[in-house]
Image (cartoon, rainbow, N blue to C red; front, side, top):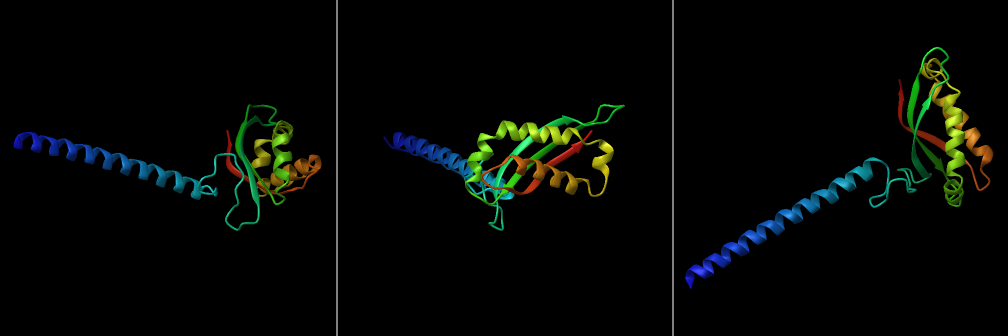
Length: 157
């Protein structure tokens, strides 16, 4: 009888250890997701692509949208891979951005394809590209305007 009790204690102890390890792994997963979201400017429980306030609390974000386009280089094939996040202030603009997403993607691709690798290598090129994109996007919006554009990645190859 004492052997059965000792055996039961051993089973309970092993079960407790398994539960503790699983809870520890779950806690680590939650911590990692939280750190990722905080590091990327999203709120703790936001999903990718959902709007979230950036640190200063002023703009809402829409994106990121990834783009890979051919650049306008005549004699060689050059590519641009970039991620674009749209920043806006008016909450009502989100619905229009979602509705017009295909149009905005097409417009962004059209603007990006106008540029050459040499143009993008210039010192002020990102600011010029940002200004051009904002102007083109704002020209089709009716519920508000884009306040800024952020590039989350930018690779010319």
